[in-house]
Image (cartoon, rainbow, N blue to C red; front, side, top):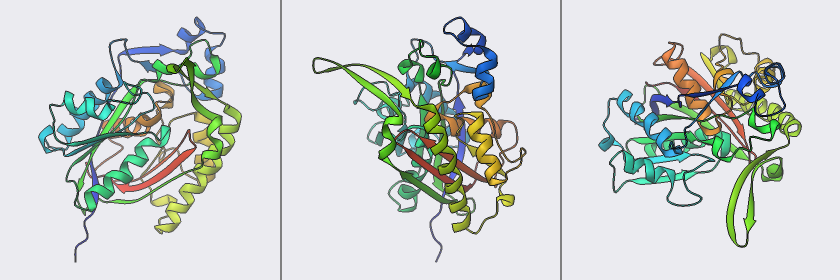
Length: 323
């Protein structure tokens, strides 16, 4: 009996036009291009305009992802968005806004909050929905306007993050399956990386990101490495069989430390952190899209995704790309 297998059948992204370089940041806070590059590997990042919302970024990536899947918006029966910078505080969801932008009504649409691991979580959700028969074509989107929650007087934070969106469609295709997805969390470390809510009376007035970088770095490297070892071992796949390793693009030092521990070559590893910075839930699909447009990600490529984010949350995914 043939088993239903979900597949990621397309990938796409959108990045805002405005580029914020390290040299621009030198004029805003006490920092230097040399320091940022040495500590993070980031040269520049994209910043959404004042009139661009997270849902706008996600919509533009979504339209391209639907087209690349050879579908129309009306073929989509669920939209799930991962974001830590939604248009609204709690409602309406960014997914509902994107559904409206696409002209869709009467479909399932909701957001999740898993920080930088968001796209891995989306893959697990979409895989379950499609393989159970509950949905046929699930649009998954990681979209962030992190500039809207960044304090640009805090040099330890503002140099790291950028804006953007990535999207994909998950449908049935047993020839190019999402082989396995692993997600996990540990709330004990929540205060090391968070968006702090401030209060005026009983009304939420502002959000700002706070991070204890050194502590996050140590936990991230070990957790990411162990998670990859576990998912490869579980599925009896060697690191040498992986065509493309696409880690969350948070910091070049973290990526290189994980790459070295796992013995992945430079040719296997996808890097975009230098030109986009950390775009949280959008990071992995944006990197996948760049690999696709560069010809490195092809139909049937065996890819490994790996992410770690605030919460703490983390996850990894093994799949054969079906695009």
